[in-house]
Image (cartoon, rainbow over all chains, first blue to last red; front, side, top):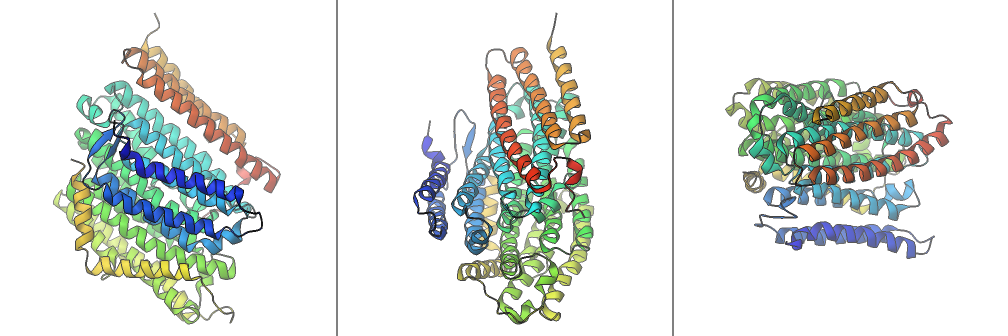
Length: 471
Length: 102
């Protein structure tokens, strides 16, 4: 048994525990910002270490836990997302609560859950990783003790999330019963298209779609995104969704590949519905976080549609899209955080006049939103192109067309936000301040979005290698 | 003779009752209890499959232990959340969680 494969997960757990201990040892009145920097530095070290694991393709614990390029790709994505989220949220978290140390520790533990999910090679590990991530997110969503919205969002997420987990588990129990195994490759070997098996598959699909907020399992997303503290919303949108994608891909392409004929149609309908509902409903939103929630539902639809290709090209598109979606969201949420630090609310109206007060942040927001809408030369265009090319090859032309039309519609509501920033007068003449680390994150997001859009080669290569390691 | 089908039927009934409870219960505590029912239905399923399908390995029973543990953690967080809601609104009625919609 090669325990060294688990090093990065163990390291993150130790980092989280260290932060809890330091938090207890530090004098009560001292600021906890140092703990945040400590977490960022630790994660950077772990990120560098994960590159060391490249090329590995091995399993531990009787095939329960696998480390391959696919898992590493997602782990690095999660770690980068966490680092960037931590960096842009120092001021916000300190204004939110006195227990900032706890907040950082919880965020890191949810990261462990995601990393376990990316490596999960059997249903039990999938379940444990998923629950580790979601239970911690229940706590984080309800972390804002001053706001009744936060507790409401946390409770809604808890109830719907646990119900979805129960449905997912019930599906898993049927799959286990009719294949006699929970390891994905052995499930694939014993799979038959019996009704009970299909019931299990359908229930599992519903459970995963809940985590990815695919229509019609999206009802929780807008409320939870609106009520949660902004860094938590950002992590939910970027990392938790990507973790759902990782698990969904591994389970459906490794274990259920032979039942493609049954799930492809359902997946295409779910993806199409998500694009339509996410984009149409977003038009009427007045809250930035809620607007981004609906936008994330639509983006989840785009990512899910890549599964229709069921081959390396489609998976490559999905991985590529997950990265660029993360990068664009970091920018959008960083700007939202800066505005919230200033005005204390998340209305789209609060963005008015941002172009005069902070031209740089306005540009970052614009580029992020247009990247999500899929306009060239931003990264979103290339990502959509990869996915649509892959699924058109497999005969899903209608989904590609629908995606194209919907992304044109989405330009409309993203431009509404841009219009508010550029043409409306600011509400007051107060000086606009944003911390250096937040500006750095915004800059990283801006550069990465444009770089990936103009020069997608390197990332596409990485995504391609990761996608191929699934087979 | 009681066989696999009996266990699966009981599990299905318990799961359906739980699902109905989640959708129809008025208080958050009741909803949490219904979720527990759903999870316990899964446990019955897992242990029955483990006993009848793979009697030589204990996969299903181990899985059930994990499910019980996770369910306990979920309820612990759930109770904390209910205290918060009660503190904010003086009620645990699910219908009163209506500050955010559309």
